[in-house]
Length: 70
Image 1: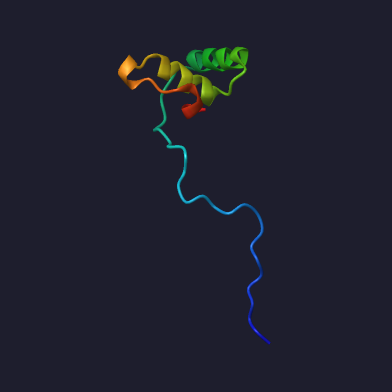
Image 2: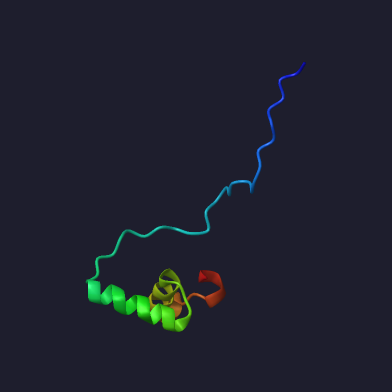
């Protein structure tokens, strides 16, 4: 009898992550609530809304295409 390992199930793990994690940002409770409401009104997650808001502040030479960041 041979010692065969059972096949692993599920999606294979990614070799490279497509996202980076930023350090935490301190905001007031009021700011956090305002950002959450704005994201909800835009139909976005808080993370996606924050990325869009930050990207709008970039100078033109650093602009990122919308399809690259979401």
